[in-house]
Length: 201
Image (cartoon, rainbow, N blue to C red; front, top):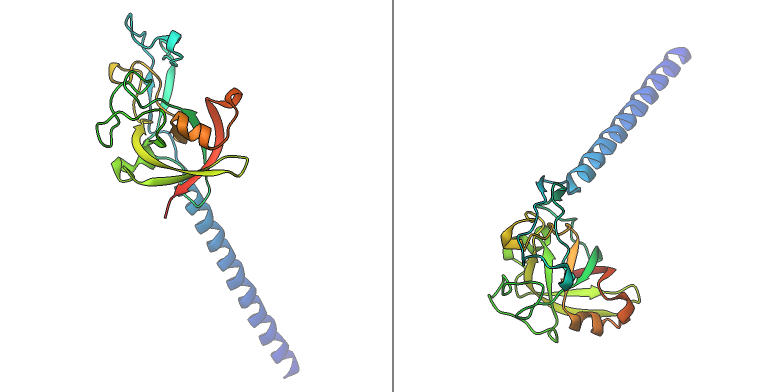
């Protein structure tokens, strides 16, 4: 009888270990699939074209598409969290600025002294963040609030509508000069900075 009890205990222990192992395997697969699903992969590529004379002027610090070079395009951006990592660029939203056209959200130009930003296509969400505020935090810890007025298009580029400039990266917050100044960023760093941002409550 004792041997029979020991055999039953061993069998029960084996079943428990098997079920625990199965649960761990399922959890690992679920987590891996979830992480894979949250990644933002390119949706395609566009080929660079030679800009016609008078367009995409490097004298104005435009970044022009290189003829024949393939550029990744994205319809998505990384997931938004309370501290979303992004790369902030310096943009002008006023007439004659590097944006060219009026802001997509309200068809207005905005002074360089106004706290406004453009977001990459995935974060712009088809305009659902238009005229809403976001909080931007610099590496120094200083934060400011700015209004979303435009899209930094990650899904197309290298064409006349986009002044033959490459598609935006999918993690861009294009900010007006006022935002850079309010964050206390030194003039020597104007143009590109790693920041975090979130939707303002």
